[in-house]
Length: 113
Length: 113
Image (cartoon, rainbow over all chains, first blue to last red; front, side, top):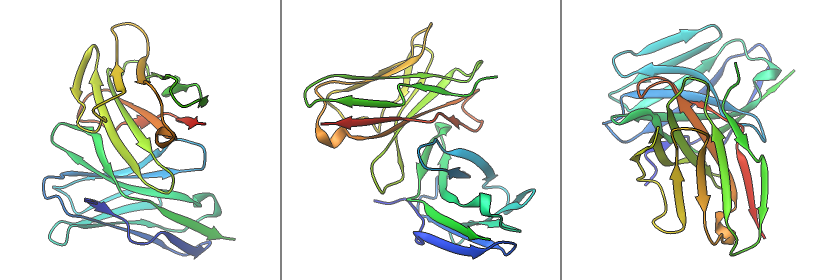
């Protein structure tokens, strides 16, 4: 039972354009959502988070949008840079601890110069 | 200010041997989480520990796997009598408390031959 889904295995974007990564969830008990970035052979790096009481959170080039009625969140990266090329994981948590997370399968983002 | 340190980075074990994975959390963090990533999949939660206590082990296999986080020293994930299916990347994360973001280590890649 995949409670957090990232339906696009990969995304290719030109440098300077917007990257939009999507994530859907099914568990209404989730109240905290995060995006992590991961390079090969490294651990996930925290990017940005959003609480269920908000619908938008912005940090520099990264913005996360949350649509609770649709159980959908997205990560926007503007402008995209070649160094953003990595695997992006959506994760959801709540309840016991914000460190106990349910991860999506990941989306491979490639930003072309 | 060191991040989460995991060792070894790579571990090779023969079927039937024991694997011990170590995790030193960020200094000052008392909450530790272990995750496993199988090839082509997202990270899956295994266990959540706070100093000397197991808080949530709902993701741990019932047999052969155990975890501890003693008062002094690193957290240890122990896998007894390893099988080929245990081959995966094991990530440890730590947080200051249960309501803050968890930061991940670089992982231990276990290969069972």
